[in-house]
Length: 142
Image 1 (cartoon, rainbow, N blue to C red):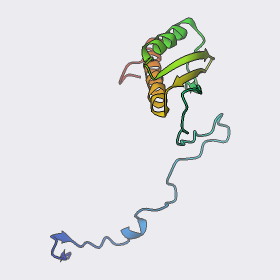
Image 2 (tube, helix red, strand yellow):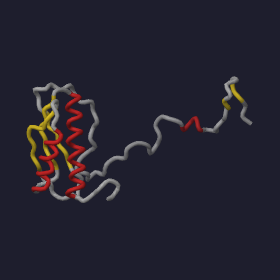
Image 3 (spheres, rainbow, N blue to C red):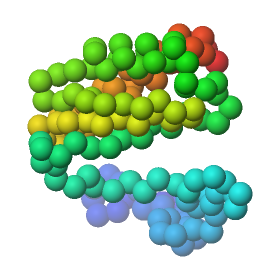
Image 4 (cartoon, rainbow, N blue to C red):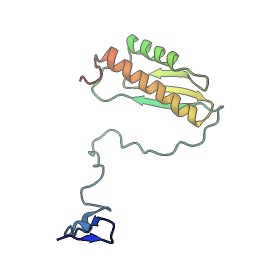
């Protein structure tokens, strides 16, 4: 039977071998490797380097396989509308190029923080509008 340990009101429980399985590396844990025939590898998440306002940044937005081509008038209008709505004093998209399965953006920003929030604004707004207007998806519905 377990007994109170050290007068703290806590119980000392021996869990028979659980100590050996707690924490650390475990067989089968972690992200699974991609198939060898996958087109792209996993994206490395690294800290963004310091940003100077005179240097525009190139951002690529890719869509999942199997979706319709982005090269149509509806998508161009969605992207232009998203860019206009996402403008703020500290960040703006100065150029873009729409390809079949991805979009290139050239973004200028005052600093690293404005760059990060500006990219997020554009990506989230464009994805929501694309899902709603092009794919007919709404929140919670596939």
